[in-house]
Image (cartoon, rainbow, N blue to C red; front, side, top):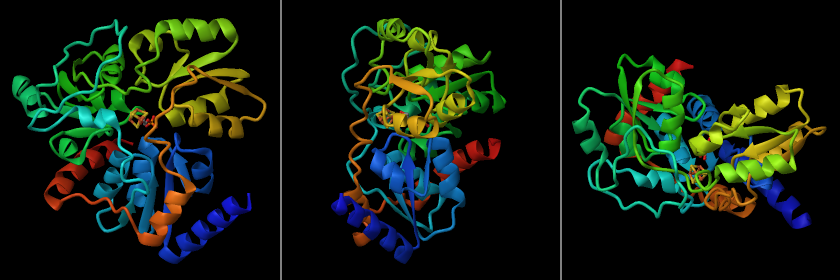
Length: 327
Ligand code: 13P
Ligand code: SF4
């Protein structure tokens, strides 16, 4: 206890000294969320990173999030406390040389509009659909963003697609987010076959089982879940969208269809309500890598700094700025 207290005190002291801000994604460990200046979903964190006044941003999240902060604020020092905290989905698409994809999970039943095998690259799919703008989920690397027209998050994908003056759009890399977008727009969505291993493992049977256990609970699901899951949900939204929904709802019980780190804020902000995980193993190992110790080390050593080469950063920023301007 006193060890944790000392850690916290030292982090807060160094944070002042460095003129630093700690940003945390909603999936981070409870104690990391608690020490952060701002906790949010990808869209909120991008907005904060682009506007906040500080010299150093300690980004408690995964690599693409810190990279986006570095793109949006090239003159700030952006630190990722755990350099190996990546997002496997962001690794599933490459600009110009194919990348091997992780094994797919069995039992995947629904089919996207178009699925491209992973021996293709982003440039291939663009060449096959000339003129179709590319909407890149923020869960992508900087060079993929730089090659895209506009970014989106789980909170605004439909709004972003609707804003484009084209009837056909390429949506990368999450097939489930693309399915969800296709269900909610008249435009044609060309999907990439990427997925999040944390959300894509959930099946219709999981939903039916948890609903049997908690028949009065409302199901909130993240659009990275399969369409067969989303079709059974009461509300489909980003992580912070779930926080807003639970707060505003008159219901007293909720099933949480996303990474279990979100349970911390849900419970803290709604003391009279009950929250149950859709699956107890919805845990993102990369999001859990960051600890108070690694935050302290980041502040002490000013490591590990995330930077983006200027020629990539300028184009990637245009795609991120276009998304942020929509708000
Ligand atoms: P949100 O933008 O909804 O927070 O999601 C980010 C993410 O990585 C989901 O797996
Ligand atoms: Fe990536 Fe999924 Fe982890 Fe989000 S939860 S960071 S999409 S692996």
